Amino acid sequence: MNPKIFNFRMPVQTWHELNILSKSLLRTKSSLIRWLIHKEFKRLGLTSLEKSIELEEAAGNAFSLDCQ
Image 1 (tube, one colour):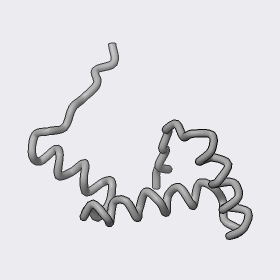
Image 2 (cartoon, helix red, strand yellow):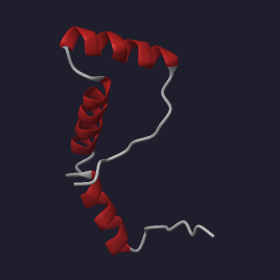
Image 3 (cartoon, one colour):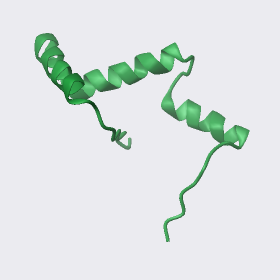
Image 4 (cartoon, one colour):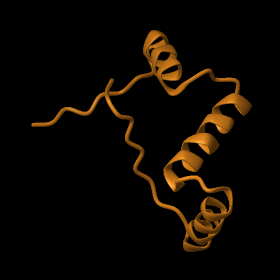
C-alpha cells in the first residue's frame, strides 16, 4: 500500500491548537489531520479522496502536469 502524502500550509495558531489537541487526546498530529480531512470529505458527500479523483477523471475534469 502506498502512503498518502498531504502537503499543505497551516496558520501558526491552528498548528499550536493542533499540538494542544494531539497532546490532550494522545493522538499524533498526522492522525488528527487525516481525521479532519475524512470528516470534510463526508461533509461534502464524498466517500474518499480516491473516489473523488475517479469521478473527476470520468467527467473529464482531471488535469495533468507534464514534467519535462
